[in-house]
Structures are given as C-alpha cells and as structure tokens.
Image (tube, rainbow, N blue to C red; front, side, top):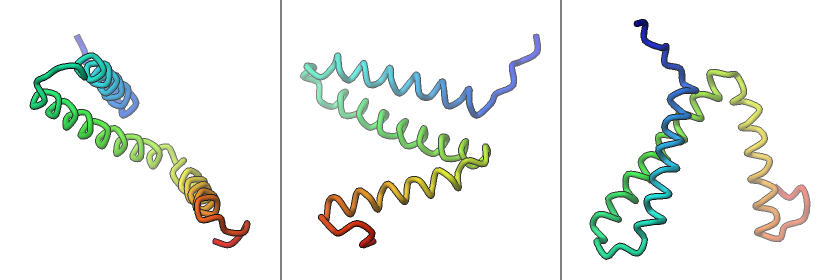
Length: 92
C-alpha cells in the first residue's frame, strides 16, 4: 500500500483537531483538583496553538496570500489603535 502524501493542509487540519480536543478536555477537567495535570495540559495547548499559528503562516506564504493578509492585518491593527487611543481618523 502506498502511503498518502502528507500536505501542509492535512497537518494543519490534524493539529487543529487535536487543539480542539485539548480545549474540550480542559473544559471538562476545569473542576479537577489536580492542578499539576491541568497546568501540563494548558502548557501543551499553548504549544499546540503556537505550532498551529506557525503552520498557518507558512501555509499563507506558500499559497502566495501572505502579502495581502499582512497588509490587511496592519490596516486592521492601525484602525484598532486609532479607536483604542481615541485618535482622529488617519492619525496613524
């Protein structure tokens, strides 16, 4: 049997599913009194989120969509800063 080719999309989907499973586990374990176990799962979830974010950024670069997304993100961030700092429109 020939192994399926591994794509970045498949890896991202698998990691995202695992991240969601960890979140459900944390929701269910929140009442647990074993804080050491809970903290370990929080750490794993944070690491998974970081890896997922890096993979999504790499996916955007490989797809050629990174430049558009970056410009949109910068624009949205500047708009948010204008609102937070209560600056006049176009101040940044």
